[in-house]
Amino acid sequence: MAAQMMTSDENSRESLPDIQSSHDDRNIAINRVGVTEIRWPILFVSPSSQEITEQATVASFDMFVSLPANRKGTHMSRFLQLLTAWDSHFSIESLKSFSQSILKKLDSDDAFVTVRFPYFVDRSAPVTGEAGKIQLEVAIDVKCGNQDDLVMTVTGPATSLCPCSKEISARGAHNQRCKLAVSFRCKAQSEISIDELYKLMEQSASTQVFPILKRSDEKWVTEAAYDNPKFVEDIVRDLALALSCDERIAWYRCSSENYESIHQHNAFGEIESDRDFSPGS
Image (cartoon, rainbow, N blue to C red; front, side, top):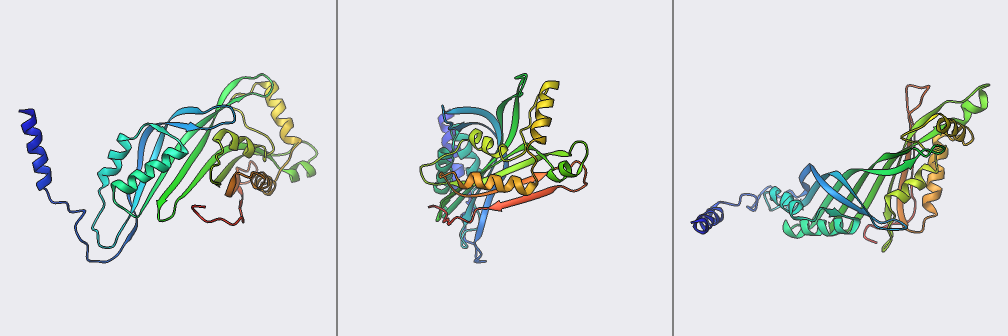
């Protein structure tokens, strides 16, 4: 009986019209069509200098394909079918493979996947060693088809202290938390771990931020920032220098947004690499 019902359901599906695959006579191609903000649990696999690490997190997926001018629509359910069937382990390489599976399943010339997720790095207080975690935001944009490309963006916090305030004030100087962001493409056969990149990022600021600070830790952080004052311009220039010296990086864009403590506005600076780059190289 179950087999008969399954056969009946299959026959019923086969007899239903496939409107998405029908012809469209407006002759307008669509660059991207698909689904957005699909929340999904994943294990993100990240390389490091010592070992491969896995971190469980919840990601948001955007998935698209290009649609030719003569096709009415795409099959939205297939995006979710592929995500459901995929191994929960995601790495840079597996995201490329996942994008290729979308390309083939939806019979398209181009496929696009953006995955965003929080990522946590361990951080101990500088004096007491109190353990905690810093939350970073990661976004990975993958494109495959006519032109392959992958860009990773890592955003995380640091501390800045104003050089002008320090120079002109009889006592103290104002500081603020800043949001650092780096988008980058790696050269072929190269990878940079999230942890490694964040260490490089926060070294460009006045000092680090910490999840837990006791009094002796707070003294250390305050004095460390005071001894290393930086404008937002200093931060992005130092960050750009560090990224430019890394032979694994083919292209980058870095920025700092400083949440000013004595102004209503924020301060912002951004530098984009002027290296020659062609997507897919």
